[in-house]
Image (cartoon, rainbow, N blue to C red):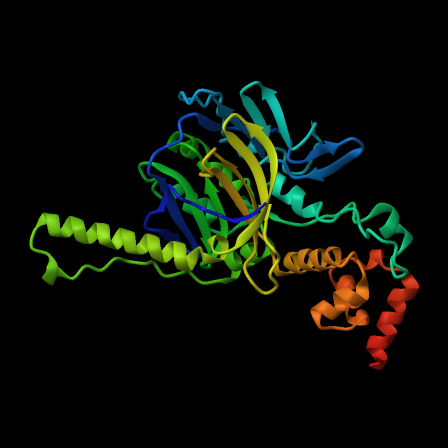
Length: 384
């Protein structure tokens, strides 16, 4: 299924700035009472996730979310929420292994444990993982026999993003706040939304344990503080408190429109391919990925939607340009049955150039060595 990301019911409130970090609160018009989230922390800093029979991947597992819902629409309670306040509890010099059956696991009839961001990252890492569907002569035996597995990507924990910890600590949590948009140097780093304000207050600090891309880490380290957006109301139009209230409300509405249409346009203005992961009552847990537009903003993510399509839970991850190029190459190859000349023709390059792009993207092992050597020789000599 392909559709856009709709944040109906979530309204952006005025941003707060700390250095290069800008946090935009998301407030719900009405909380979702029959779905609740709480955190489940793990003592280990790494995990081996069993994603299926004879398949697993090793990944950083800082925490899981447990979704609790009711079948009749009555309020659900979030219970057992635990936040780790003592960082010394986690050894800094060791990374143990913790085993899980899968990234989304049913714990009880009305409870589902899933690993935030791992649903979406697993989908990205598994993108066309089967490799060539036809054994064209350019592909190696490994590409045909094993596909792209295993694949690996790097990311930074939120605690390593300069300024984010201070921003989360000092910023005010708005009444009714159910989410936040995290910007670093005014580049959208992540969107996070939950069903209920109490869930957000409990999970606010978990943003430090989430994963952020290389671009965001570099921006936080190298970019100067961003300016604050301040509302300006002409005093000539204010004659009473009612006038002031209306003017202030108008400024809030103008900010929300500016945020949604300009600042968050790279996330909200595009269609995504959605994949259902789990159904729980009237709610659906799914992950989504973009069409991989090179040199543009691209996000992957996961969401829980209700039976009307409204977002109850959302978490996104911004891909780096390198990750976008990998996804784009794999998508184009798959669209042409992994036929190199046809794919190269669509991209407006020759086959040798496509082969070298695959090598630069980390997919050199997919090509036979003699074929890759031939591409390199053609590039050196300038042969057509």
